[in-house]
Image (cartoon, rainbow, N blue to C red; front, side, top):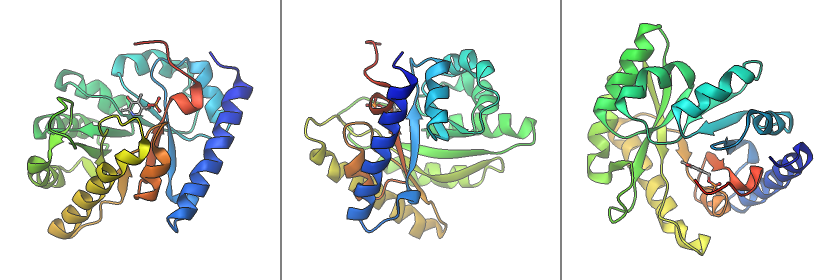
Amino acid sequence: MPRAATIASNVEQIRERIARAAARADRRPEEVVLVAAAKTVSAEAIRAAYDAGVRAFGENRVQEWEEKQPQLTDLKASWHLIGHLQGNKARRAARLFDWIDSVDSAALALKLDDAAGETNEWLAVLIEVQLDPAEKKSGVAQADLPALAEAIGQMPHLELRGLMAIPPFCDDPRDSRPHFRRLRRLRDDLEKQFDRSLPELSMGMSHDFEIAIEEGATQVRLGTAIFGERAKE
Ligand SMILES: *Cc1c(COP(=O)(O)O)cnc(C)c1O
């Protein structure tokens, strides 16, 4: 794992870059939450990022977080599931995470709502949108987004906060801009259609988060920029 000092200096540099990107868009840096994407990263490295001030973390796999979580119960942070979630793991995910950022079907949402209801809790959720139908990735198709948002809106234990997307990878991060803009427009349309606020836009990763912030991201999910290159998965 990278040394704690390296993680701390990475976080500090990222904070400066977030502040500059926010300023370019006439936004305040506090409007952007840094979510540390911690897949493959050790509990020690997560703790180092926490000590450097990071208060939100994302994991891709339920089981991986189940293994690390017992070592980190003293951390006061919010824990996001950012990877694809299978329905048969919804109950465990609802117990382990504060946010599920990758809800992409009503069936999955129902399972999460049931699970959260069993413990009388509620879960913050984002809908993951598939921005490029050519990429066979997770996320709800844009055409099905309004129906899914409406369905989740009826579920008493889910609190729909906004949208998330992983746009197709572009070598030049500026090419991601139209994708980020599209996600923001989809969010704006939903807000109008349902007359409710959906404040969160989770978009932007290590190579393109500054563009995402210029286009309205409120959560950026950064792994490599904080923890260094991952071993090939
Ligand atoms: C790994 C991952 C990230 C972070 O990717 P980096 O390029 O390392 O910053 C963000 N979001 C999701 C869903 C991921 O799986």
